[in-house]
Length: 540
Image 1 (tube, one colour):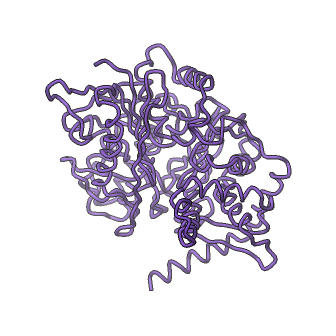
Image 2 (cartoon, rainbow, N blue to C red):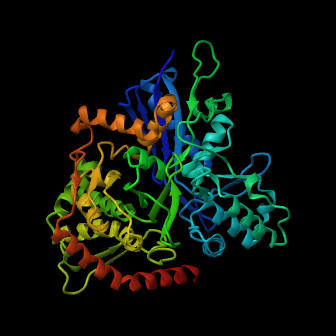
Image 3 (cartoon, rainbow, N blue to C red):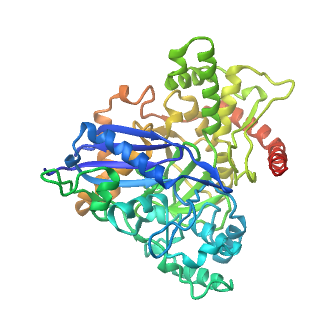
């Protein structure tokens, strides 16, 4: 059965999500699987067995309603960066080290200096070089490194490839050649050869091949079909699925919000939050707060990445859910949407400056704020206006505070931003997060897309669909057409109360956020000291 339906699956920090689109790019079905990282052996990780359990689960949910034969195109995305290293036999050498690990400061500092290019602690190359510096036993056996999306794609298709957006978070790329930067590859080899245990190491031989959006990245193999629980080659139930290049969650966020043109960008808010701003020209300086990655077509993007966003908010909402259960309101306790909507609506009635309350939702370390490991912390002074509306509002303000710190740095480059598109579940319940983000981004208009809740999985499904149309359209034209058709047929009921609407924070809201950030910045040292004390207590 010929088909053009496209399935996008994204492995996020707390959910694995799948979105199925028809040939007109309408959402047919959505499925998800909840999971969480674990802190094992000193590293944040996910068990690869659960990767496949989650992927198989969402695929099963999709194919319960739509036969596997109706899926013509597929693509996987996941959290960018991190470290998955394999030997020549394809065996995992050390447990998956996610982007969340902050043990790579030494490698980050050395590579940034040698490359004259910011290499954040999250980058795969930083994890690899830190393993060199640590003299880890597995280094001499490394035959291939990749990201989580690249790993899943490899297992399903046999192809060791990455989309250029995801690849740019592994090793820096060249905007002209759309390949890894050759000068930096050579420099890395020189650095590695200075370490006695590494002989004749060639970084270029262990990196995934780079592909651009729309290129054919392979087809589903028999092994891959078994991993997904799909029929392949059995009687008349054969499935034939073409894959697009695997991408990172930054790239799928850009696609999901149609923000791949210069002067545009997007903000993806979840466990972490990052702003992606498509550059008209390269930055003149290297900033540790600003990463340079690319769009799925290889254009440079300034990325402000904060390691924490909604995790602490989610934890507090769960506490209020427990309270609802304690007073006998089981219906509200089991309705996450109701809890968020109620609390966010109340927060909108709070004082614009949060009444002097400050929240640091640092569940993990926060590089921009110079916090190494992270301690969730809420502060109020004796004269603060402590009430529930201000409490929740302070947490929403705090969710975007580290992003604000990065934006202040980027302003030095006089970057022009006409609009930013936002996506993530935090934007579904109220306009307050949208207005707060506008204030945090220095008054830039913020648009929340109709697919705000679908997020990266939707973007990945679009990239899968683009494989079919690349021969006669650019990705920019393709997305413009998709989003124009979406506006014509928009059904608000499917996405909650928030429609596609640009919002700019009012002048008084901007001023109030500035006041909040003044308090936030002044008291950051308390967070840093708490972080140190907690680490010392854990050692004891």
